[in-house]
Length: 235
Image 1 (cartoon, rainbow, N blue to C red):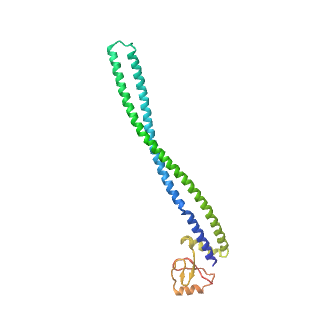
Image 2: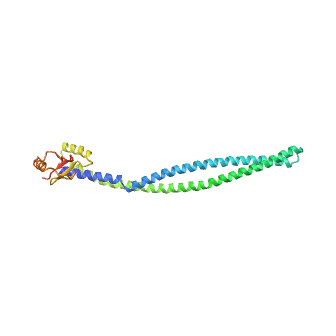
Image 3: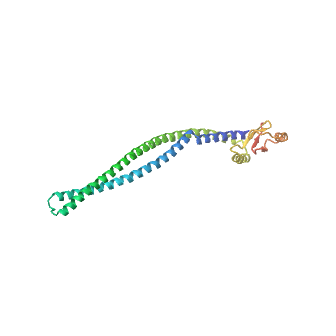
């Protein structure tokens, strides 16, 4: 019967380990981590597009500045009275008008870029806000999981101590066989013979086999013909 006590403690420990592995907080945390990865990828895409547009805007601003500087210089020359050639004056005037048109087109494009950039900034801020909220929730969940682990480990320690005490009453050979069978059969290596049935697989054994088992020596290791678990008989 001491082997059944060992089994009971092992089962309790397995259940506690399963409990800690399947905490609902872990499921929620995994979902948060998956969503956080999506947000990270999304904000990366948005920032890349924002950077590209901003760089293009800076280029246009530089072009506008250069064109305006050239236009201002030509206008000063045009109205300074230092150019007397009608042909040269006409050429300068045409270039000034061309530069004015060019600057206007650049400014239109710059405005378009600003209109593209503004919603991107709002989207980036929204994604970052959501990521921040998820990070806060993930931190809380991680704390809750840690607390649960500590509590469960305390229960495991109690069960482990009880198991160690029960195992002292089981021979080393029987305990070794039990461990091998338990590893093969989903954590249950020993079962009680209840009437004519094995409590491990819940199947009935033939009457002759039951009679043989009951007449066997208490020290003899008997296994269930159906599932292979060690059968423990009550005295």
